[in-house]
Image 1 (cartoon, rainbow, N blue to C red):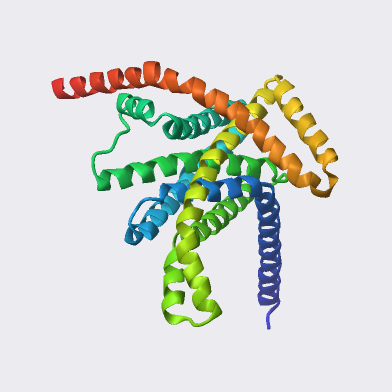
Image 2 (cartoon, rainbow, N blue to C red):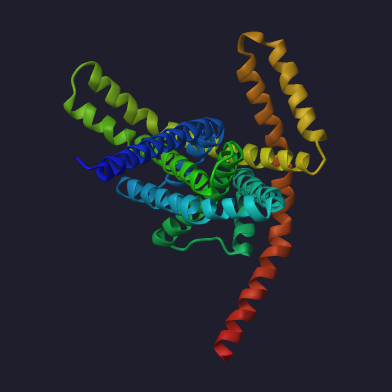
Length: 328
């Protein structure tokens, strides 16, 4: 064997080792970053099923797939390159953008609660801002679009947490880690959502074909899943409020207004110390409650602003553009 060929094989072996080390590094950093974003992932999984509740069973999985596809586009097409560019050239813009996202989540959650408490007034508000839907197809499209917009905010937080948790490395390494996290989290969240929304169908199959304990389990799933899905929809609305409030509180702290964040943290720690047998869970619950109060206040404050200012302004701008297009 010639010396040149031996040298070439050595170079190939060295490149293979570097590639393997890079892949290991990507996997390790993705696992670490994904763990840091776990809280938002759980919130995402809680929020999504509420968009499927109320549709016929044959539309459930197609709706989940449409939302999952939109989530991947959000993460890989918009947020990944956008996050890297902002991190490199305009890191100051990340906090205000996240804060706007938090305000949007708070508004969406507050609007749903408003609809539960005073449905007639909420109906009038929806008519004013143009979100009422006249037929099932439009309802599905509207629900999917709303879910993808909400996912965009949650995904933005996931990607921001991922980017912040990365160790120094090349931009390609950072992009690879963010892509792995984006795909892994999307598969995990929407795979879980698909299992949840189709659990009643699995229950029907078990009840018909199973015997003994399996048949009982199937009947239990069939009876219990409608209530479980409704409860999960309520939890999803609450998650929108507390996640939105949490983003607002954290963003305010980034601008030097750390009082609300410190107050919530101090109360949560005190509550955890008061109940040491479940300290971590109590701290999380109190933190979510405090963030939820902030999110609820911000969301309800935004309802009249959206209805009386932003929606008419948007209609005026889009109407003017339509007139200009017709004139052109």
